[in-house]
Image 1 (cartoon, rainbow, N blue to C red):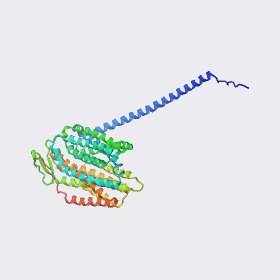
Image 2 (image 1 turned 90 degrees about the vertical axis):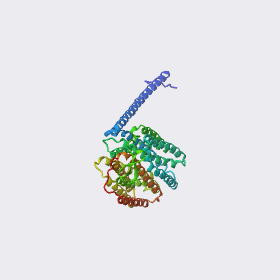
Image 3 (image 1 turned 90 degrees about the horizontal axis):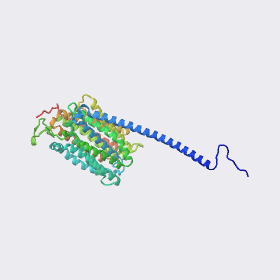
Image 4 (image 1 turned 180 degrees about the horizontal axis):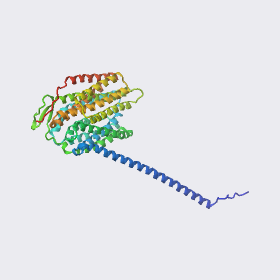
Length: 479
């Protein structure tokens, strides 16, 4: 037998074992050092990205606050109402994203239409009561506006928690809670409209103030929608819980509004009846005056675009689910139509902010006419592009018509009754939205038939509005 000897450079026995362990320790140290270097690199990258995101967020917040405080809005307290409206829109966006996959797309169509129609019909009674009463109610209590606005936020937060549980358990309380959110949202619009005139600075017109508030809502919804979408990825109940947090913060923001929001010193009550333009004595010495003809005309014209908004919201939600276009998913189709409406609303706000002079009486008529014409075009050439254009037109018309109504109230209603005028007019428009939604649910799910009916209703309303157009506008003078 021959024995093998170790070759040059090799060792045997204990020396070989020690050398192997040494090489292993060196290799481990090298790997560990590389891992630490890589970890430090990743950590520095994450930290850098976090710092950049933080700087961008702080810059955006500073610019938003600077825009909100511009032209005296910060000193008057209007900036706080602007921020509050951004929270409101953020919460509404989260609720809409959650319900898009539950209220309309998970429940069978026949059952959903029946239940939504029933509860939407029930909501008409509160609006019928709110329209004539909420203005005088807010005028009568001098320390209630901030709490009234905060109550609408708190109620929506509670309804969102109830909705989250109903979505998980598929409870029968799903529809009542969803429509409770809707009613509270509309009630917020009424209470906010009543508070705006008390916070408008002297250097800012009421139309621009409302345009700035509306633009803040668009920004709030745009920021909140992706966050709500991420939450909804884990389940629709998480988007609703996120909405609860937003509304809880909004409740605190509402209570922190300036005290002048609660003051009703020197205000009066507006009667929603056409007629005289001079104030008359009312209860407790508070002046009362009838609505001027120009305001009544602008309000009637606004009911058309607002009716169409409610109609399209309900009709399209069920129509696109049962009769999708091509291979498009119903959720995507509805999102495109709603996105078009949002873009149109943003364009309307931008136009109102840029244009130096707008004829309110002409604008409200053109808005109603545009809605009727676009509804006819969509009925004749039904398809994805006409539907998106209809949503765009509806959003643009509603935005411009509402801002024109605000301008008319500012011009023709005395300051002492502007709060009551805004509360009553906004409640009337919310009632028009509810009626439009009810008609949209009741319509058969045939696109051309439904849109043709919408066109007919808008055309008939346009004729009525033009037939009741007042003569020369009158300026209300102080008592």
